[in-house]
Length: 97
Image (cartoon, rainbow, N blue to C red; front, side, top):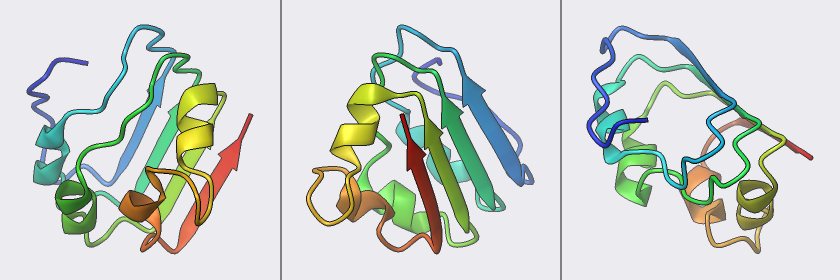
């Protein structure tokens, strides 16, 4: 994904899949004010979500799914992972290997 991702602010559903070299999602996600569902899958090297401020600015985000992203899965472990504070406010978080 490019550092500055330009997606429509009206986007409600986003799936990011099979980006094998990406390590972090960009802070430009803050512009996705209508985003309700974010699904991330098969991103082997992905370790970092956007910043806490960006993730908390996504006020409509109700569902986050992370599947097949081993490094991010570990970092998003409930209560203990270093990325958990970024997603703990999201009502429905699903993380699988």
